[in-house]
Structure formats: C-alpha cells, structure tokens
Image (cartoon, rainbow, N blue to C red; front, top):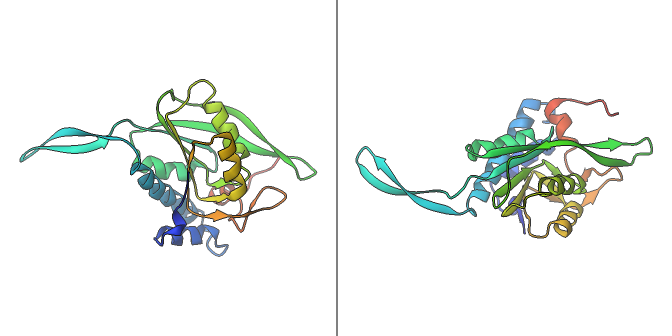
Length: 216
C-alpha cells in the first residue's frame, strides 16, 4: 500500500518545495529541519493506523480512560542521509526502540554502483511494527537490502517505509520483494537518471544535510 501525502494540500507540500528548491538548499539547517518536519507528519499519519488500548489515568479531578499505543514501534534508518527524517519520526514516537543501518552506494569509474552494507544494529523485531526512514526511495535497492538484513532472523508484524520523495521504479521494486509493506511518501516522481538519482527529485539528501563527501 502506498500513501502519497502530496495528494492532499497541506503545509507539508511547502516543505517539499523547499527541500527541492536549489535557491533554498544552501541552508543546511533548514533542509534538515524540513526533513525532520516531513518525518513528523509521516509519523502522525502512521500513528492513525496503529493499534491502541485504553488505560485508566488519575487526573487532579478524578479518573478517566485514555487511549495509548498498544506497543511501541521500532524506528530504523539508513545512515547518514536518513538521520533528519528519522529524528522527525522519533520526535513523535519518542518511546520507540531504534535500529541503524550503515549502507551506501559504492560507485565505479564507469558510472555504475552497487549497494554496500557494512553493519546494522537492531532490537528484536518478532511481532513488532517496524518503521524505516530513508529520504529518497530511488531504485529501492538499498531499502530492500536493509529490509532483508533486518528480517533475516525475525519478521515484524508490519513494515512501514517513510520517505520524502519516492520514484515509481523504487516503489515497484520494494513491493515485489516485500509485497505487504506500507510506503508513506511526501511526493512521487517517475524518472531515474542512469546514475540512479530521482528526477526531478532534489539531489543528494545526505550531502544537502551534512556536506559533500569524498566518494571512493
């Protein structure tokens, strides 16, 4: 299931405009904050779909019943680009356990690349809800590799992917590999370059958040 939040007019669309706009991208702090705010909106939307239970609460004036999450999710992200989006999720799911995956594109001189994943750290996932953040779902290769690693020994009850911009190619690839996954995105683009970047997209989310990297 894919939820494209840009289909409904909201302030979210203004933040998406700013992360795409080259005239605004020079402000790294604003770029990171907009990614964080997109993560917060996605967290709120996901929260509407999760199971809740009623708990009794003592107020200064008496007793009342209030709903709370039946269980806390596990929040995961792919370093380094996913950190601001992940922080937005964590701002709302502030009691959640967390998982981190170190993965990157290893580029070759001919312009091709492969996904290198060096480690991951994760709590138990059996029967839990996993929410994984990556700002760009382009080819889907890094997301599928991360999910294959995370679910190698234990299968979550649900998998939710949170992304700022997704490409239809990446969405279709993830759905083939993990057909029951929920994908939440702030925008969907249809084109990829030969180097695997989304068009019109926004460029490299990691570089825009933290500065240019040396590509080995």
